[in-house]
Image 1 (cartoon, rainbow, N blue to C red):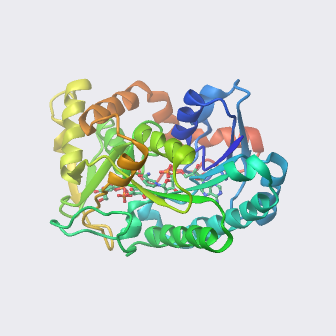
Image 2: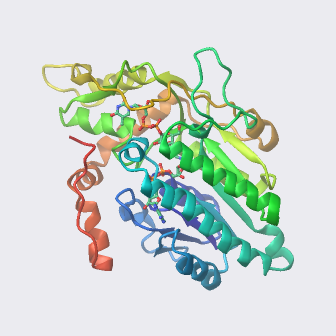
Length: 361
Ligand code: NAD
Ligand code: DAU
């Protein structure tokens, strides 16, 4: 089977859906089940013998070594991370632990495991490291998009921790020959995204009649990709990406935050009209994020030309689909908002208290 770390989070769980929809090889999700994980994202496969889930912290050396020894994976796709920039500003330590030490721990275990493999298993093994465009820093308005050759200039503790992990992955390939491939993707959106991130936060707040907080002047630019397109790209890169390479993933959809928030408001005015007001009346400009990067943009030409990947969704069509998904899945949204989603862990593991979400207020 393949091991998918962080497979109960937003992109990881979408990747499991994507993988099991296209491939026959089973999946082992290895996830610490932090606040960002939601087992309900994988409930569709509850009876499917192709999916197993293990609760594991990727920075726990013994547990990670056992994970490899007991399961003999054909490859690893590494999504597990602390992923929210605002949380990294409030408390960077966990980002250093999971994103840097965790990736290092996985690499060490993968190296030991891979070095003892022979024949086809050794040739096939891949360590796909899922990273972000934020490692490249911030672009000026007229700068060309980031390519694989752009310099690393991370600005937030989150971005710095991901940059460090990318360097470790590179070093493990260069030094030990571990067959690694790294991906650097733009902002994702779609089903199962935790509502601390802009798009689900705005959808859930707007439907609840709560304010829509826009940081600073709202003119920061993000380059958006639908999560299913990202997952397709990772699957293609796992199958055919060149070892030791990095691939940028994006769908050339640059928008300011204000444009994104207005687009969601317009969709909601149409799909779920609020009596007596337009959703955009809820927009409130609030204090800016510290060190807020002004613009990200990715040039995906290498992935397109080498591996023939193309995004299948336009931003507008994917946003429409996403808003409809959140409206159709009120139960999921309600359990996330209330903290009820954490009960699954208590029921199964008898630990942890439901956390109150800070983001959706
Ligand atoms: P997420 O926060 O939704 O999910 C992260 C998952 O990792 C959760 O299930 C969490 O429980 C798990 N995890 C955290 N610490 C762990 C640990 N120590 N051990 C094991 N599991 C742990 O994140 P996401 O948005 O799905 O992002 C997934 C990956 O993709 C991350 O590496 C992130 O840097 C990268 N990425 C995200 C985006 C985006 O827009 N969301 C864009 C580019 C790259
Ligand atoms: O670029 C890829 C990155 O995209 C990933 O590596 C990160 O894991 C992911 O969280 C995301 O980072 P951002 O910081 O860009 O995403 P976020 O949704 O937090 O914010 C998007 C933009 O919206 C950003 O400019 C900050 C702004 N924002 C965000 C929130 C939560 C607001 O204006 N108001 C908000 O309430």
